[in-house]
Amino acid sequence: MSGDYLYWETVPTRWNDNDVYGHVNNVVHYMLMDTVINQWMIRTAGFDPLGGGAIAMCVESHCVYKAEVSFPDTIRMGLRVGKLGRSSVRWEIGMFRSDGTLVAEGHFVHVFVGRESRRPQEIADPIRSEMQKLVIA
Image (cartoon, rainbow, N blue to C red; front, side, top):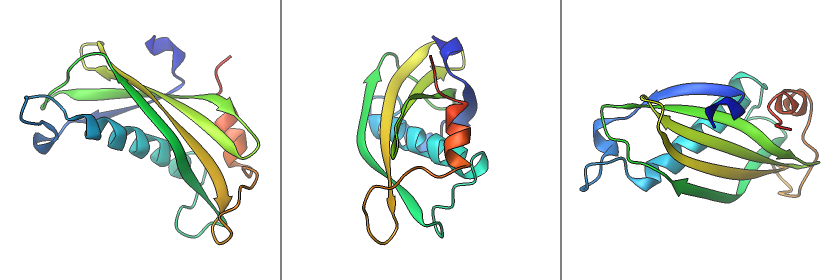
């Protein structure tokens, strides 16, 4: 349900998001999930993807499609943390059409690794502290 998500962003669909079938192509859903997660990490948690000591690598992603959405509709993206580990986080995303219809549900698992070593490392504060605010019970 939409009330289970603790952070929200609304994104417009674009003309080129529609495929030959007249709806937003499945690839766009993944791109939107990745964008909302990374925007949140940069804006809210102070994550520096270009110069920080750690990077977040996607090791798993999944999406279940529930309904169609097409340009020029908007998609309301709900974000929460389903599981917060020592070096990993499972992001859960709900995508809702402007009329409230659930369009898709997905998840991304990020593992934080050293920029140079590419070995797992603990999620640093304040990123962890901010992520804890999005953890669902």
